[in-house]
Length: 159
Length: 117
Length: 140
Image (cartoon, rainbow over all chains, first blue to last red; front, side):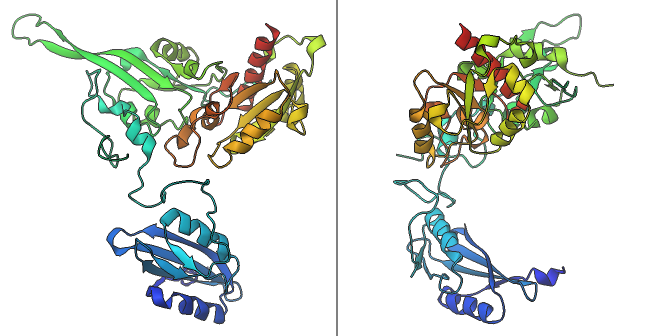
C-alpha cells in the first residue's frame, strides 16, 4: 500500500455532503468504512466519513462541518446501509441529526441519558466530584487549590 | 500450580525510607488512586554556620487497589525509586475498603520485590 | 494461595460458577477455567449454563449503565444463598473508567458482593485465590 491509498481528507460544504458521497460510490468506492465526528469548537461539529474501494484499494475521507446547535446532515444509509449505526452513534454523541435516517434512536447511551458525551463541554463529573490526591503540595495534608488540567473547579459547573 | 516469574506485576510495594512525599506519583496516577499526606518538620541547626533544615515527613501513603489499573506509571515516574513491582497477587477482600492498602501493608510487599541483579 | 487449600471431599465442586464475562477480565476467567485441576482444588466448577444452576456469580469486566439492569437480572435469577464475586477493577469500582459517562462505578452499586478481587486484570491465580477465600467464608 502507498500513501495514496490513504487519501487526504476532502472538505465539502454540508450542503454537498450527499452528492460528494454519491460520487464516491459511483466511482467504485463501495465499502463504507466508518463515519464519526469531532468537536471543532467554534467551527462547529466536523463529521468525517471514510469510504474504501475494494476493487481499486483506494480510500477517500470526506469531511464537513455542521452547526453545534441543530446541525443536520442527510443520511448516507440510502447509499450504504451500513452507515445506519455509525450515524446513530454520531448523532447521540455529538448532538447532530441525520435527516432521512430509517431508525434514529440512540445506539449506545442508556434511556434518559442527558447530554452529548463526546462534545468538549461535556465534563467528566467524577473528576470534578473527587478531590484530586495530587492537589496537595509536598508537606501538606490539606489540599491547596491545584487542579489537574481540564477539570473545572467544583461550583463552576453542574447543577 | 506453576510458579510466577519474579518480576510479574502483582502489586505495588513502597520502600518507605526512599519516599520524600514529593507527590509526583499521586499527580501522575491516571486513576487518582494514590493518597499521600505529609507534613513539614524543621530540624534545628547543628554546629556553627549551619541552617535549620526542613524535611517532609510522610503521614499517609495509601493506594486504592480497587481503582488501580496496574499501569505502573507511579513506579516509572518516582524520582526516588521508592515504588516497586511485587509479584504477589492473592489479596482479595470481602469489602471494597479492604482493597485500599495503607502504608504498613504497602511496605510489607517489599518482601517479594526481586533484587536488581 | 489456592494450592494451600485442603480439598474437602464432601464439598468438592460445591461452587457452581456463572461467569458474567463483560470485558477483558473474562479472558482471565477463561484462562483460569481452563485449569481444571486448579479449579477442582478450590471446589469450583465454572460455566454454569444459566443463573438458576449457579451459586456463584463472577462479574468479570466493566458494567456499563446500559447493561447494568441485565446484570441485576442475572443476579435476581440465581437461587437464594448465592454468592457474588467482583473480579477486576472495573467491577470493583469502575476501574480505569471511573470517570466515564457510561460506566457503573462498581457493580456493588446494584448487588451485594462477597469477594472483591483486585487487578486489572487479575491473574487467573488471583481468581482461584478469590474462590478459595469464598470457600473459606462459606465454610465458616
